[in-house]
Image 1 (cartoon, rainbow, N blue to C red):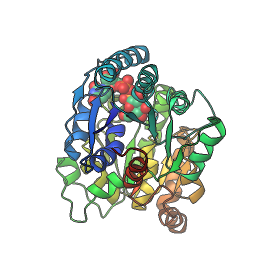
Image 2: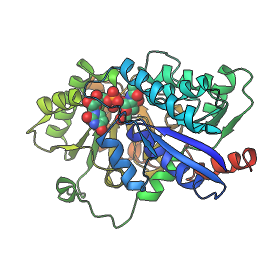
Image 3: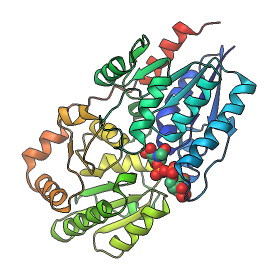
Length: 369
Ligand code: UD1
């Protein structure tokens, strides 16, 4: 048997790696073990349940208020021990989290080859997003095989990781995951969502990035209050579990008419909410990739994006965190149908839902028994 370890620890990694794990497990000559670091607890469990993946190892490293040093050292030691005893032929990590970087470093120390799924994303500013930009660059340097979602990401790897011969363009696996869960006749389970009137525009908001903690987040909330007060719409804020974020969101937005605060729902529920929404406001990376596949425009609540393909295609706009600018951008999209339709109908640059199959196909050529 060829042995593969797939490592992840946060909700987005689980969603984006689930299609890869499920596709790899179809090969009877491969043994695929999932190592969960548990960087996230509840949010990760939710995502795994949707795809019915049970981890083979669970390190359970999450503590409340965990520091980046704590996450890094615990993942490094925990994953290192597993790799030492099981000795897989390849370790697959995903994206830009501290789990991904520390797991890649553990594999490197054990001299086990590494494949990086979603390789090559860049903002060109090391500290922004923090710490993700550093995590992905470091992971790309450590990796032997790079699965880049787009041509531009592949080009970033070729330019930066000199001598890297194994760079493949696969599309983004998040589209595979998304197409698996969206449904025409979906019935929401979260009562607030089940009660929404979708004949009025629904705006979905998520914020979690560290560089948005503090003043930027307060500014975002101010913009949301203004939008809710002046436009015929409903705003749903899906709150990340991080208590530092929830405290600000509750203080700024509780009890405001037309604004609904909900705990982040599971992936199936959230994907179907996105699908039926008019507009997304987010600092998330994954949403910038998913929304174009659903023809929902995205306003990015950040100063930079490592996903320029969506901006170039016209489906995403980077609007930052200044309340006036956010407000003006939303107002334009809600009132100008031409501008709205141009964004909504822009082509999806992130893939066709077959990325996981491509990754397996490439691995099959390299790893046969
Ligand atoms: C992490 C990733 C980020 C990714 C994001 C997606 C790092 C440094 N950051 O950010 O790249 O975009 O996940 O969500 O790798 N918490 C819970 N339950 C959960 C999850 C989180 O209680 O299921 C709380 C804990 O108090 C934890 C805090 O959230 O301390 C922050 O979690 P952490 O993993 O440090 O960073 P994220 O902001 O979630």
